[in-house]
Image 1 (cartoon, rainbow, N blue to C red):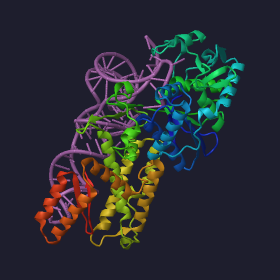
Image 2: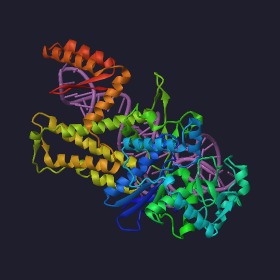
Image 3: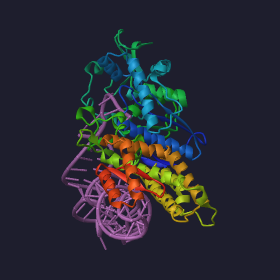
Image 4: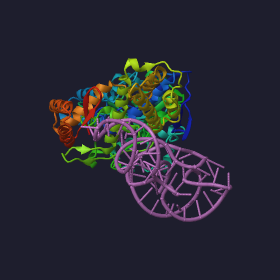
Length: 496
RNA sequence: GGCGCCGUGGCCAAGUGGUAAGGCAGAGGUUUGCAAAACCUCCAUUCACCGGUUCGAAUCCGGUCGGCGCCUCCA
């Protein structure tokens, strides 16, 4: 049984769904005005693991993650680029999907876009006006926070304690139209020649929060089992969603609120003004997406994750944390490759019990994830598992080595569980390892042909027992970062 | 001003009352023609600091110092 920290109660509590064995999960997706950054990656990997884990535990999940494709930031960017807002949003939506797929996130069952839900927005805003929770002011529509009972309970704020405009972004003209400084826009009027839609209140665009209330209700119903997003969304976004939705429907909006911690770059929040902003597309040429994936799992999802970088000698940044993660992913794939390389004739029936760390891994992984998705502990469990697989392979590779069929089957089952729960290790091992090697070789200016030639030369030298020449080649290559591995059948290479 | 988070070995990090997981780096070993990989062993009497509660605290309480986030742009 999964237990998850609930932002509303501040406690870890069992994840209980309305319908048995069906979880309705809604996660706030991106506003598509730019490429997905590393913080998005972290966030959506976390919810991906949530969904994977629920499914691996035998639960059906309806996973909805919206695309916010109407927003002032999109308009601003599009203007700057001389592009139609819709075109920019479409481009970024496509890119976002590609990036999420590269990170091995499962595709949500639904990815609703705001631009497909204007009618629903009109309907909910109208309902709120009719019920006295919203008012029209000069082409805008505002939600009256004082009319919402319990406003502020998710974020633990009291309206009277909040300093209006504390963030220094107060819009004077807009403030004039509001009855209370904390009221927020459901609909924002816009000049007729500006990007917008014709609402019952005139030309304009929806306010920021209304789209999630409308789309989650449209796709999953009035009450969600779980609603998730980044910590920064607790206030005001989710607080306002609750107010809107509950005032409109009279039902509890979400039974469980989950929020992930932020990404910090060299100890500070990532932002463009600080020059520490990285999109995943910046990182993919440097590292395998799956390395980034594992890296994000090295810290508990609610804690801040630190991305540290330093400038490399060639001018491109280096990320020691992701480099370390990549070594671990390489270990994972080389272990998987070793397992599949065990020759069939070495497999034997055996009455020996399957080693504990092999057979118990899927259950151990499930157990740690059940406890508030403890992924760092999951990785520790993975480490024990991989070690056990390597021991199995060591035994199978020795002279007259054998491997028990049951143990090998358990190892394969472990890899299946690892991919199902964490989305790790599911790619083709050889292709993955070659890609990592060739990327590094390319960066070092080394071609595979060059290395293959040197290996051939060395094989010839070794055949003649000219070990001095063989060692000279090894050293020559090692100086360039090429590491040779001799096996009984062949010599392979990796890049350090 | 209000709300909240964090401080664990050289680095990253789990652990929220019962005597410090895991990873990286480092040292030694098995193995290897030599290597690498893999595996084994070692590597925090101690959890920012001070005081308190308790049979027992990294974990609870109070205080101090240090770092960070949110308060209608934000995953």
